[in-house]
Image (tube, rainbow, N blue to C red; front, side):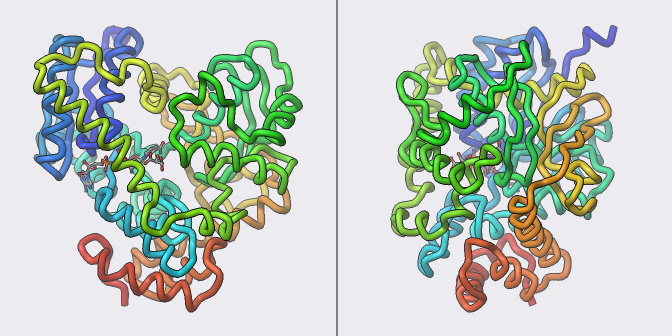
Length: 446
Ligand code: NAD
Ligand code: LMR
């Protein structure tokens, strides 16, 4: 029967630092989302092999019933799959480093998904994601792609324009990650325990309502108190392993909230509200990329090497912390079993935010089911939020214009309009430094 169905999944970006955690999460969720096949696909054979060989051991020990393999061949990767997980980073950490460090040369925010760095990353991702969608449609026309490769807002706008009928859902785990913090603040467990009204753009949104899902109790008063004093910082046991830059980010939410106490902010708003503070606090020679190289990436690859060397994955480091990946399994489950649970997606607005253009991509709560996602109506954006969003989404559209038209001026306008960039001359300097290093990935901008 349909309920006995077992699924075939391919992770595109098999060499991702998140892959082993995702594999553990899939195994832990076998009872509600059973697999018959798991594949990795990457265009960097060497990087993927390190993760793949360790995961092969995990699979053999924990889930020998699931057929496991990894490949760099698109036909092999995308044939006979039900779900494609998009987890690629075009240009890898080398390019992320340049996204962060080039703007900082000119006193501008240098960050993975916000400001000029985020737009540069988005422009690199567009062709690679389109290529994967096309392979999926060719080799497995019934499959769904759950994409979380950044810069999501720009990738989603490109999908809206270039592949409007593709079965691709662009998601981000930041809203649920913050909701798990909110749940903890209120003495609940995680995001599943909350019911919310949230609206905005990716890495650019606000909660206007948060309730206890079980009792319906309004949790906003309690959350307002906490966030006004501590931001999303909880401390104690919960924050024991939070990295330094994220600790600062959670605390900074206090200042974001002070500016706009109507709603609870997504942490990424700090880069738009306080760009000068961000630059003043950044070390132009040691950014988030360096931190990841020293911590997450190092830990993941060292652990994979250890597993391969030992020939066993017993006692591996991922058993305990798989929150990001659990969310993706939640989403696959909702689509596979048509549950119409409420999660978040980046999709064409079409009235979801009443006073925002229908053809712009927004991040809102959606029902997830066999038919994909249906956005919920969230009401009107506030005057302040609406102004912020219109500026930001225009930047995102201009990046996709630049991609389609190979237009230097559109990309320059995107940088110049962005809230994180003080003027058009500085925008030009940043763009002119970015063009040569992005040559392998960007269209030629004329
Ligand atoms: P990573 O650099 O560790 O891994 C990405 C992998 O993608 C690499 O192995 C790389 O070789 C591969 N790759 C690059 N271009 C490719 C292409 N064209 N085809 C196939 N493979 C390709 O990156 P990471 O830090 O693990 O992050 C993975 C992705 O997940 C990034 O896009 C990141 O921004 C995103 N991310 C999203 C969320 C979210 O919830 N939306 C959260 C965290 C990270
Ligand atoms: C990442 O982990 O690479 C991103 O999700 C965000 C960050 O800077 O930690």
